[in-house]
Length: 84
Image 1 (cartoon, rainbow, N blue to C red):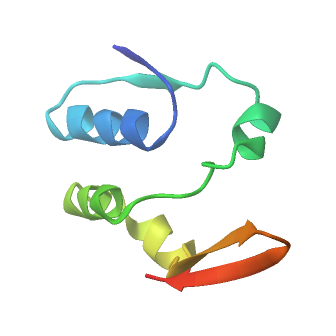
Image 2 (image 1 turned 180 degrees about the vertical axis):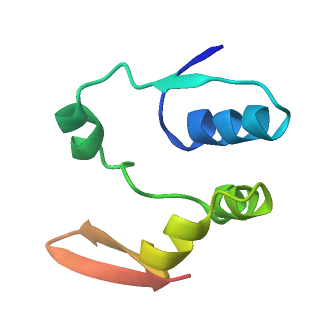
């Protein structure tokens, strides 16, 4: 089986298939510069992190990930922080 897309969904699907004894190859169709340049690159929502932990694929996220506890919006020449 081949999974196209090495983002959180593709990696999670690969792990779920592996856990069910199904071999899969995960391919990213975009160039590394494109992936890393996207605003979403590296940002995982809590639900995704929880699923990765549940299937045994969250160790690196737990070890290297940074908790995102707020956002800043910029408008009118000023930055406004919103804590989450």
